[in-house]
Amino acid sequence: MSHVPHELTEEFPDFTKQLHDLKIGNAHFANLADRYHELNRTIHRIETKIEAAEHSVLETMKKQRLSLKDQISAMLERRS
Image 1 (spheres, rainbow, N blue to C red):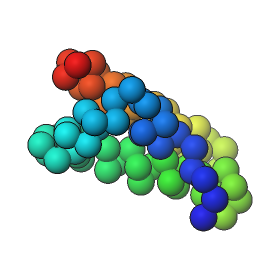
Image 2: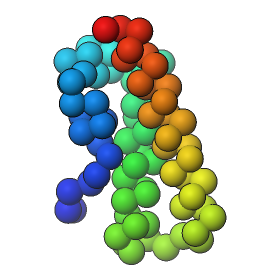
Image 3: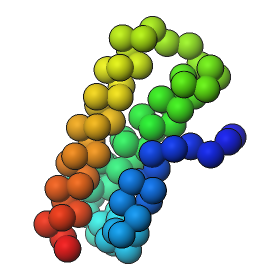
């Protein structure tokens, strides 16, 4: 598969170690990161026409991804 944009390490390049540490040591964070990853991959497949979806469904997914990203960001900021 081609490059998938919006991966967490790209979204938070200054927090690579914290991302890793939280994924290993915090079950809630790991769940958020996993959900973000799966949703991001699905969005990418829709945007690259590998999968089909209604525009409204794609927009809802993007809002969900943004919400997850905000939660992840808040946890990273508290950790730093």
